[in-house]
Image 1 (cartoon, rainbow, N blue to C red):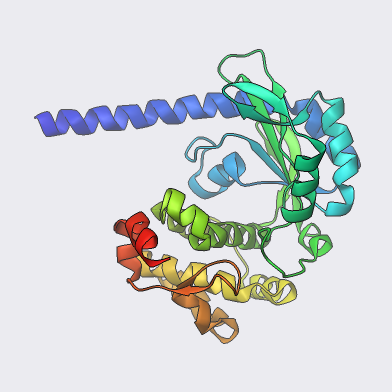
Image 2 (image 1 turned 180 degrees about the vertical axis):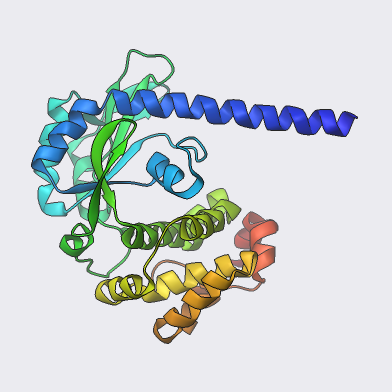
Length: 300
């Protein structure tokens, strides 16, 4: 009886957390309605990650926790988008001890030079359920350490119109969304910093599996996009390990199609640059369910 009561409490808590997350997301987007209207009229962009990924993957906006709004643009439009955000009362800043502190010129220069994102844009909100709104502007689907030159013009030629939280906006089509998702998770699966901080998350592989299972994806179109962008080996890596968990016929079929383009060197290594590439000394399941922090502390 106690076990059943405990399961019921956990389930109820999970439902409440999801409902609260939904309310926060709805408030966040409602306060950015005018921002999206202006982006729609002036800029080619896509709403990515976070809540829109949750909707496309799990069927609701609150199933994945998100603390901001992410948009993807071509780097050549950074000043235009920055001016739109400033006009909508955002500033580029960080939060320290619940205080919004504007970034220095040096901070802004660092972001523009070494990151795939602009410095975050932040605005106070009067509603206490969502007291601060953060917008992250991504200028690449690759990570900052990557030397691969991504054709963002091609990436953003694959956007489709949608309505999200009753706001008209744009998102990536299914094939490009899947590529973007895999690249984002590949970074987190292989970044030494992220592995030490957050370990290897089962959620990465759930996102990949359920997005692929829940959306109509043309494999021929997906393969063509991977070839154009030169990212097939990273997609193969993500699908390979996702299939180790789910053992799914659809994923196995995709793996076979990707196999001619995969890179055996990266399958059992971690690190995001050639210089930091290291061989794993433990198998995948130990990495996923063991004390990865302990392993990294003793093997780096």
